[in-house]
Every structure is written in structure tokens, then in C-alpha cells.
Amino acid sequence: MATVAENYFQGALEERKRLLAAAMAKAAPEERLSNLLIEVDAALRRLADGTYGLCEECHESVEQDRLMADPLVRFCLDHLTAAERRALEADLEQAAGLQQSLLPARDSRAAGWHVHYHYRPAGPVSGDYCDVILENGGGGGVFFLVGDVAGKGVSACLLMTQLHGMFRSLISVRMPLAELLGAANRLLCETATAGQYATLVCGRSGADGDVEIASAGHLPVWVGCSGGLRSISATGLPLGLFRSSTYTTEKFRASAGYTLVVYTDGLSEARDLEGNEYGGVRVNEFLEGRHQLAPAALSGAFMEDLKGFCGGRALTDDLTLMVVRREA
Image 1 (cartoon, one colour):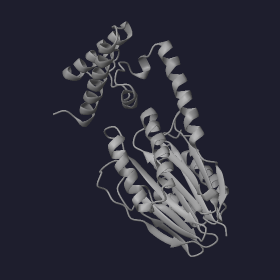
Image 2: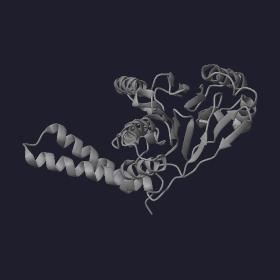
Image 3: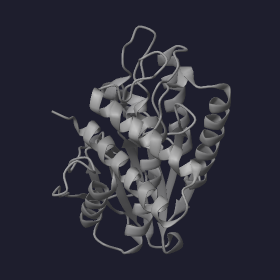
Image 4: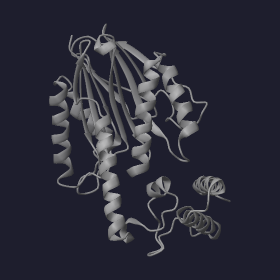
């Protein structure tokens, strides 16, 4: 029985073949189009005989994100030619530049709220989604979003870019937060490639101090105040899994000093030299005595603690940490 991925690539290749045939029927045959058609037919044959997705040099699996971006890829990264490597590096630099241009200001203040975040890709591009959107120029409140796309590399980066445009558009419609996540989920189910989904926290902090949070299968949101520390768990399934998913929200009113902390698993799943995870328990313990710090100071202290914990071990996953604090 064909896997979901095989069905996806079968459909993608057959669609390319159809488009090529249509283009060739409208004009005199071009060598470029004929060669592309030969490549597509060869890829379909590899699917039929079970060798699709294997490097033709070493016979190991080609990187999944590269196949998602280009179903005609035949070699893994280790066996690209020098020219292909240079072309790939140039493409990644452009993608990284585009992704950086989509990030919000690192430090934002509006409607009595202060938002600061730390964003660190594990490679040239990231599958983490991070945004801060000011309503009515900041007078109406602040939307804050942190998400984590399944997978890594180019395909995750592309989905992160899709989420950015999707939420920017949906928020402008001014629908209730739970409906907003439901609409985003349906759109993602209809447009994402097979197996792609994302966890996400979407919150709105109002000028009156009211806070509303919806979480699509994401890690807990930590809320700190003078009364202590508590967490808000997911209020629905990750985006892109089931079209019929629905979402609820949690609401509360924040006074001066309330702090919200949202992060991706690049923080909690970071490992030390012995392979131990940083973990959610350590996140909780760290915040217990520090959630009263200013957002930039709290973010910096987190990164220092993580650095000490890892002991020089390189981080292998994208990491985003956002701190949202009520100042007035």
C-alpha cells in the first residue's frame, strides 16, 4: 500500500507532467521542456520500482524537505556537484533573508504591553513562526503568535512563511480568536502538503488588560504574577491535522507585572553533554523566581541558563522564546 508521502509525490509529479504536456502542445517543442518531461517520467518510474527518494550516488535517503521543494531531486546534499552546492547556498541565503524580513521588531511596546522575543534558527532557515501585530497602530491591543512547524529546513520555512501571510490576513478581518484559529486550520488543511502541520499559540492582550489565548497543540504558556506561576495548556489540536478541528480560548485580566512566556521545543528539548533534556520542569523552576524581570532581561537570562545547561553542545532545533509583560 502506498504511503501518504508516496501518494503526494505521485500526484505532484503527475501534475507537473500534465502541465508540461499542455505547454508543449501550445507551441513548437522546446528542448528544455522535453528534458523536463524526461526527468518527470524517470521520477515516476523510480516511484513505481521503489527507488524514488534514494540518492543515485550513495543510495541513502534524499532529504525530505528538498524533495518537497523539488520532487525531481536525485542526489542527497553530500553528493551535489560544486555548482549545485553554490546554487543551493544562494537559494538558502535568499530564503533566510526573506524570512528575517518577515520577523517583527525584536522589542515592541503598545497599549500598556511590552513584548520581547529571541529567535534562533538551527540552520540557514527556520520552521519557527513568530509575529507581533499591533491593532490600530497599537492603541487597540497586541496580537502575539509563536508557532512550530513540523520538520526542519526549506519545507518548514515555506510553511512558516505561509502562516505569516495567513494570520496577517485573518487578523485584519477582526474575527473572534477561536474562529480565527479554526479558519487558519481549514486553510492549512487545504493548502499544505501531505504530513505538514504546525503547533501554535495565538494571544491577544488588550489595552484594558484583558488577555485571550488559544493554543493549537503547542507547549504550555506560562503566566507569572504576584500570586505565583501557572500554565495554560493547549486548547485544541495542531493546525493542519484535521479540517474539522475546533478551538477554545482562555481569558483573564492582567494587571501591572503580569508576564506571559511562550516558547518552542528548541528550548525545552535542548540537551546537555550527557543527552539530558532541558525540559518543561526546568522551565518552570527557572521562571519561579524570575518572571518579574523585564522581558529583555528575562529572555537574556533564559538564554544564559540554557547555554550553561548545554555546556557547549550545539543546539539542533530552531528556538523561539517570547515574553509578554503588562506594564500599566
